[in-house]
Image: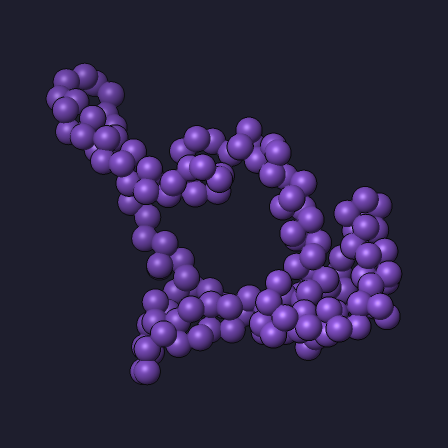
Length: 146
């Protein structure tokens, strides 16, 4: 975790926890283990601000911004622990078509898969059952973020 990255909603960057770990470390560990093992409520730290950083000098569309999530350090620690716990089973839970989420699979495989599917659609000329493909523009979804 970058020590001077943007702080979360509580205002504490990672460097605070790194420098004062001898004071806050045990409390952070106890809280994180309580959330992970004992189903303790995470309500206090489960708050995130989203900041839009402009990519261009005069942004006019959502595509001209880069969203940054300002999560608390404690939230990031808990999220990282969950990710590490899921590493061993995630490839069994996610379909092969969802290649971007599993290490060793490439997101570019999806473009090849889409090409092959559309090629198959074009070759299919007979039969009573039709086929359909839906193209989604994900940037439109970001335009509606509130």
